[in-house]
Image 1 (tube, each protein chain N blue to C red):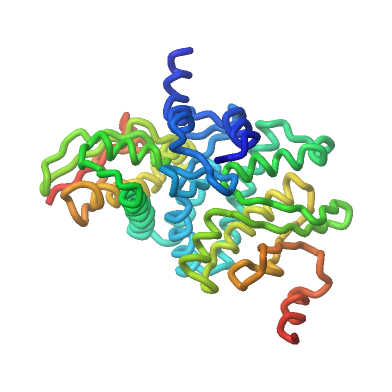
Image 2: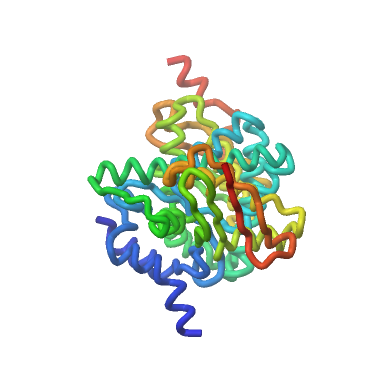
Length: 189
Length: 182
């Protein structure tokens, strides 16, 4: 069974209005079966490329980020205190479990670990190492990190991925001095 | 006003109360004990679909919708099979499944097995966002024509159904409606 706290968050924060889930009575969402979503995103990634997919995710993520800030009155000052509950809410909504390892607005650096993202899980199950879905969600998360978490110009890169055997997807911006440092280390082992 | 609020929340509350929409081991939503659910900003979804349509054209966005609708319908079928539940081909049940999987409130207004079907959208706010953002240039209804075609092909005796647009809110009609005739 779902943890009680999660069920409470869900019932309290999400309502259905006009057939759509609405977050805190203000931001409209749409829900999908994650498997169908994975197939759709993969198809777009295969046909239009990962760079396009990442950019599309970024632009869409930016729209939602702006809606959050405007509709829910999210100000930078209070965000640090609320970040854990915001991430919990996102987890319940099917954005995966985010573990924020580093968040540095001064130096514009961020490092996060992500597990249990239902669409990415299906992407890996269905397409293995060929999956392109991570690029899309990295774009979305980059936009949120840039606009809401104030990590200026955030453009996340993948430094570890579940599809290649890691325990989580590790996404970072300005964290590793050289892009792909970890991958090189792995190869040399 | 109060009545409307009650009606609006009914599906979600009902799904939660009956434990149809829960999670077992992970803290995200699972529909019918098997189907993982993910959410997406509604306006951003309209934007995403329109961008893809602009880049790849009308047929592509329809086919993308078909892919999603067909897969969602297949996953529902697989789930019910696993649960040992027989899913009758009642029109009302199909529209309930479309609604529960997040693709809006629809009504099948005409159905002749193996020959003809007509489907009307009662409520799908994504189409309204499409109209708001792109006016009559919105291609979002084509995506949903694909989604519903996927469901109908799977659930009704109309294999390879490809719905065509009959009415469209972004062109000034009151509702979006689609039809298919063999």
